Length: 219
Image (cartoon, rainbow, N blue to C red; front, side):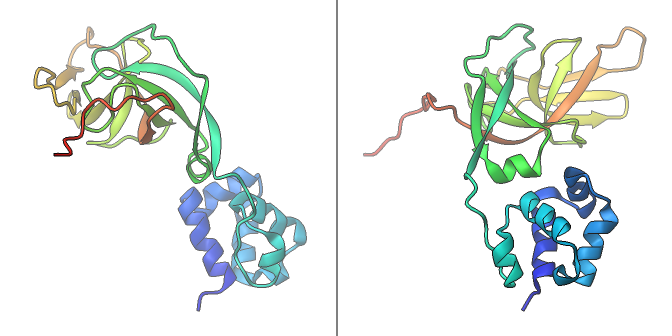
């Protein structure tokens, strides 16, 4: 049977990815967290234990009894919708209909730098329907074949699958419309297009007024 410390270590990895990121979110030295996990909760200061419980959403009373039980936190947290971006061609001025929208609280804790952007267009409709809200982790590392928010020549941006090339980048649509084709931007000369990859799409959700763009055939 796993100890409380082992289960806490797993919860930290699930929510934050690493002990180092968790420690930074609490503004405590990473050695403090490792010390608690190695020496044991009962040998750690109550101040550290309370901070850990708050960061992981755990009930400190139950933890003192050797149990990991969630506090009664809300299941969702509101996240700002910061952009309205294109899933077609770049746009610079797309109005926002909403300012915030709820996402699962576990996603908010795991990706504290993530914000929602509204999708406009159908070039990614196999994965992200027109009108959907995509959760973008701003500043995250983007690798080949990731879905990302990309800005072209200073535009607000567009959502595309990114493929990194030796001399540039290829932006690939994921559309049911065959007229959308990949676009390659090369950086071989001084006049190359300015491409900025702003963040990685990690999750999406329909807005409250979302209309399903297809009909079910129930016969």
